[in-house]
Image (cartoon, rainbow, N blue to C red; front, side, top):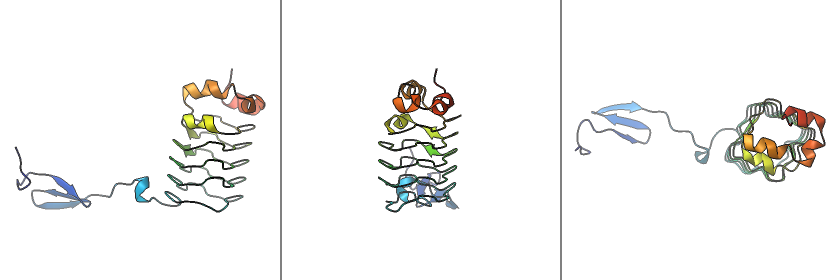
Length: 165
């Protein structure tokens, strides 16, 4: 049984670790709710068309119905971003992480999605025609469903890059 007053009691408070009278500064935890860097946790309202945004953090952002077309987002993080209705046509998202992102009605037509990381929300995307998904990380149960979609079947390049049987 230890009390708070006991010299061996450990407590973490405001980023400082207290132990036997010693103060050791610990780095703060990074969380999207605490505001990250770049565009994380922001509400976005302007077009990103034609720009270069490689390695930017869009985690937790709200970016509904925005134009992200013809841009580069190589290595970007879209963790739990709300991208509903947005357009990523002809964009390069090589190595991007879209884990848990809302992709409802998102267009990835002719987008480069090589090595991108997706969860089952990829199934909500409106259009994948012409998209390249070579080495993309896709949930195994999503692969079969993607291979049954008309937009995927309409493009030999997309179908082969998943790969569909």
